[in-house]
Length: 146
Image 1: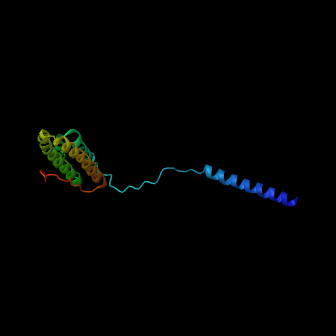
Image 2: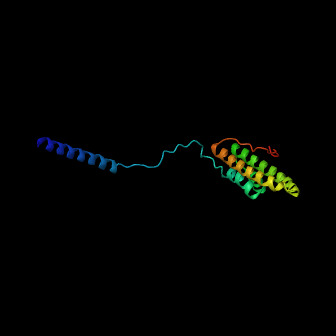
Image 3: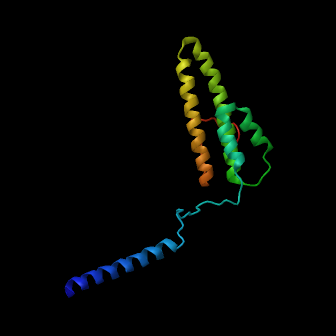
């Protein structure tokens, strides 16, 4: 009988001990957010670069040209991205004229959407490079502005 009493007593003590540990854990403040490590310099606003990259394929060549022409800042990385986006938009304008001529023989119906899709992908890559603080060069782009 004493063995059974000791077992019940030990079991009761273990249960109380576990309850104390659980209540301690439950009252501890716990931050569920993952740790954030900032790897980039957020002191510079590069919104104009994002607009220039993204608006080029969406609204046409005029947006990147105007953004570049009105930029007066001293951020050299941003300036190089604005130049690249302007060059890419001018190159795409020329290519769109060629694509429209090719539509007369129906091949332009295929080349234009493919080129436009690539332009969107390249613009997203350019914006990602800008946000990472890296240079970017659009492929197959004539460098009108240097």
